[in-house]
Length: 110
Image (tube, rainbow, N blue to C red; front, side, top):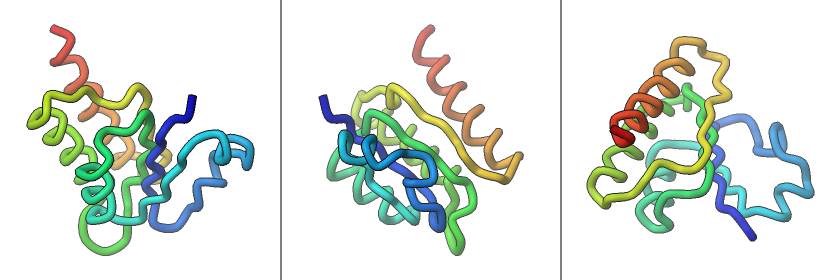
C-alpha cells in the first residue's frame, strides 16, 4: 500500500533519507517552505509520515509547520501522522518540534 510522506527541508533532498526503491514505492513529497506545506496539508490532508527540518531559510520554520499541523488536526478532527520525526541539525529546533507534537499526541490519548 502506497503511503504519502511529507519531507520538509529547504536544502536536503529526500534521497538523503530514502532509497530510490522507497521513493518509488511511496509518494514522497519534497516541501521546501511553510506556504507549500500549508498548501499540501489543506489539499491532501494529513500524510502517513512527516519528516521535519527546523530551519527553512527565510520566514517560517519547521516548528511553524508543526503548529499548523496541530491546528489542522484540531480544526478537522484528524490525528497526527502515524510517524513523524525531525532531522534538523538545530538541537533546540529539533527538540521543540518533537516535544510539541509528542505533547499534543499525549493530550489526545487522555
